[in-house]
Image (cartoon, rainbow, N blue to C red; front, side, top):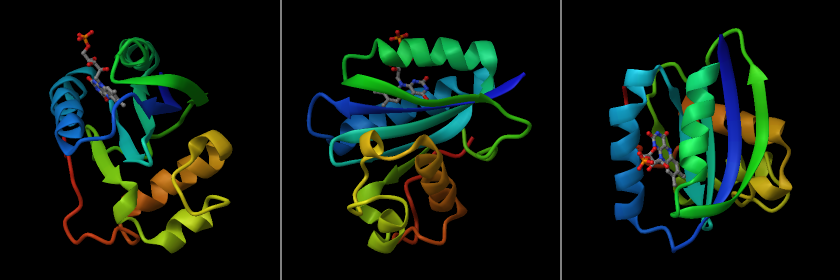
Length: 147
Ligand SMILES: Cc1cc2nc3c(=O)[nH]c(=O)nc-3n(C[C@H](O)[C@H](O)[C@H](O)COP(=O)(O)O)c2cc1C
């Protein structure tokens, strides 16, 4: 049974590119083997991640992620059964919010910043879907972790 989980968290350290690379490397190794797909958006010292896949697999991964000392203040934004995946092509794709068209950030937020703590889960999910649709990514070659 497919579910999607959406959460927000705060990085403990300023987000060094190498730290994100490390998380992505773990994800692209682990997620395909466990049928997990999703998106990791980061910016402003905040993470917004969607995980989708089998219910038990998503639960297990979220529990592992929640124990990770690299971030804290995890807030579960959404957890729902889904008929189909929104991000089927991505074992985990990362999006740097700083590279996103400011108008796209403003479309889904009050201040044009990545701030899932003050944004509804529905709006955060809509943002992730639009980012992955690709039209709003400023960089021609966004940072990808295709499965
Ligand atoms: C924001 C964030 C997102 C993460 N996303 C994933 C992910 O999608 N898949 C994954 O395998 N690990 C992810 N990790 C890494 C896990 O937290 C953890 O390092 C990994 O599951 C290994 O756990 P272990 O050392 O307990 O075996 C993420 C970590 C952070 C901080």
